[in-house]
Amino acid sequence: MIKLYKKDQPDHLTTWRWIVQNSDQEEQQQKVSENIKHHKIIYDFTHNFDLDQLGNDIEEAKALYGEHGWSSNNSKDGKGSPYRGFGLTWNPNKKPFANEHQSVLGSNDRSTFTYEASENLNERVKDEHRDTLGFSVRTKASNHKSIGTLLDNVNCTLVKSRISTIYGNTPVMCTSRPFHRDANVFIGTRVNIPITTDKPYVFDLKTLPEPLHLKLGHAYSWDTSTLHRVISMRPCNNPRTHIVINVSPWWDWNVQEECWQTNEFYGQIHPIEMVYEGHIMKGLTAV
Image 1 (cartoon, rainbow, N blue to C red):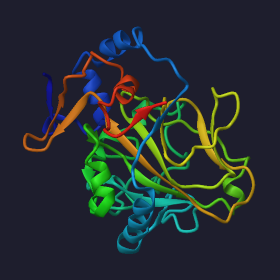
Image 2: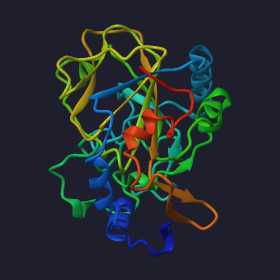
Image 3: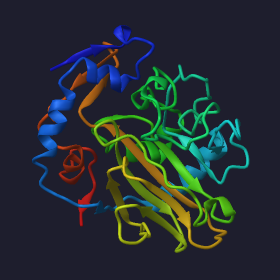
């Protein structure tokens, strides 16, 4: 087991870059990527989670903790953004600071939606928006009723997770919406669970032959570093809400020792295969 202590992390490195510089992470990634068994563009699972109860409890949590918009330097408070929700994790030391339930929803010093391959790595530093592993503290809303029960099925450290609600009745969410990319699956492995939706909402992944409607009763995972977007094919008055679960697949946060430590999957199994085989989250059955 490798342990890297938070007190030793320099300010000029994101948690991930610091981990890579102090471990054989990249060599282990290469090894498992050459031996992946299940090759799919998008991984589809079924589940028996109570979506009605989750939907009700999400609305309760919004009433208690707020529904926050995506923050950027064009909309510093996120008000008016059609991409809304609340965080399930946060970073109390985020720079610039954002409150507990807004923390994962963008950053008021940035114009791009999230990661971009063209960005200067030197601009990614400890505790800023792209420091994915910095967002590892559970929010109050993450423990609210059935939301907390659902998250009890997650076996790895949660990072940068959220409730995501999209309002499809604005031009911003229609077919002209740009693609974006997120961190690769070794940094953060996602499980996306639709809670409420409507037919116009589609997930558009650059490597898919056509956009895909993500169905209720299913959960999905994919390589989030591939360009993708969510759009409404036509104006839609019914919002779309998903739970976006994001975990650190190979490095666990040790709260007592305040360190990141490797787990039993490090260098042994690809993160997507961890989802497929039930190591990331219980209650999912591969289609």
